[in-house]
Length: 284
Image 1: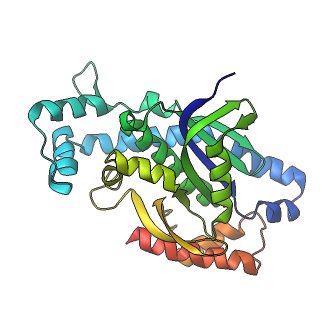
Image 2: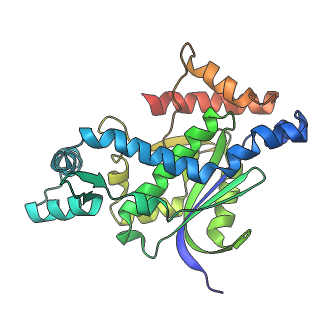
Image 3: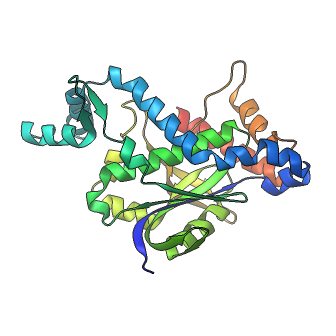
């Protein structure tokens, strides 16, 4: 048995005990458990659907120019530009391009038990895994949005290090650290550990991930995160769920936190207010 290096994402459902206390077991089995058990397939499907929708609108050369030259003032020659394009895209038989991400997202392993979701993606070296890290972050983002829309808001944390996972058994400092960090969060959000942030900075990746998904909106968002006993600045995987027709931001949050017959005690009201404020800033 040997450990491996990689990314770890640890998430738990806010208010899950409340949900169990207010629903019969068969109701939970019929409504909530299928959502949890089908997450890996639904996230992959959603991910690929999103890529297919944006692909016709993307000019690879324009995208590379936008990210590297205009946004970050990084000059790259034509040879380097083509290498980046080849890394991100595959050419199909008809000559059109598709994102080279479908195989990489399937490298993410999913472990779901009770109210906990544990993601891991083997990566030997941070400095050589920019695209894999971006895909892992995107999977976390889609997971947060998906579960929120199902009325199962999450809090989570992401880290990098040595770990061991075999079926439902696991060990490793990044798993322990993400568990501790996620349990300190007083809102629905996903934070990047200080250790992983330092590694991203050291490899000059942080500014890249801040501009990965859209020229108009950062991918990572630095935020003063409310914890159980203090506030602390963290990079977060920015997410804000789409509003349903006629809903405002607060109604959307209340609907998610109160779905499945969950009550909203005082402790949860604080998390709702904190989540609302976070969504406000990440949606600007």
